[in-house]
Figure 1 (tube, one colour):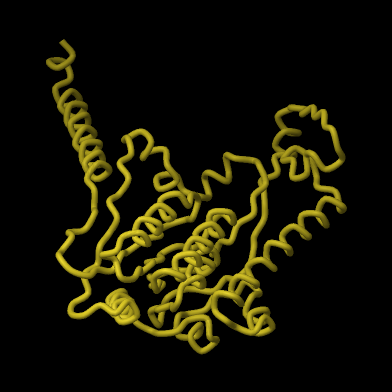
Figure 2 (cartoon, one colour; figure 1 turned 90 degrees about the vertical axis):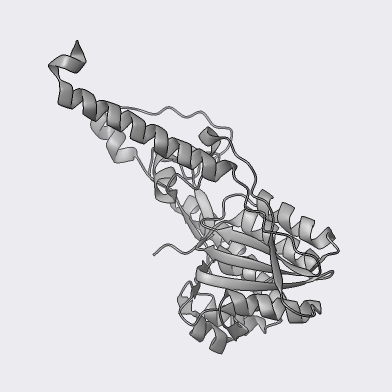
Length: 296
């Protein structure tokens, strides 16, 4: 038998199998256990967390709407620890926060990073709290794609494209970009950038020209952002909770309440954007993309 001929190898394989089962079981427990914070009697502050790259807005929208409609929630803190992400989802969360501030006060709390789309989301709130060393700013748009033309030439693959218009395959990874296509994409990028500037000017009640001077893609510390008028206060998450409590008229201790995590199947979790690095997804996906994202 294999176990008798190779006892050490057999033992190693069994140990590896048991370890793998343990790891997968632990991950499954993490995925299926809801966080939904303890609900105490009285008035509470809802907490919406935006962590990692912004690729999908559905959870954030659902949580904002839930807290907005809950009479026991007196204000909301949006905790952001994100370098930004896709344009559409960032704009959707911004809009939902803007709808919410007409009903309840919303305070944005910045963690380690709240840049680009992360800042886009924050500027929709009634106020922003950042740590002195929070990385924020990066107000701009990045668009790009991976070109495989030279690789295809080396391995002898010849792509064939049939299209209905001159710009239908703009951003094709199999050929060089034409100058008129580059101008088209630059115009799109500039238009999305203008939308970012407008959102900040409206959300922060800032002079548009002042926003333009800060909207060249540079990053700021929380301390510098406050001096620029991009942040209201310096402090941590607890300070943001306390401020939200004041704005919401909470009497006594502030009770944070988290929305329960959505239960995902293990396979869906493993293949979600939380598990796949953003750079890898862009590498294997040749389509062109535009993002409000800080890329160090």
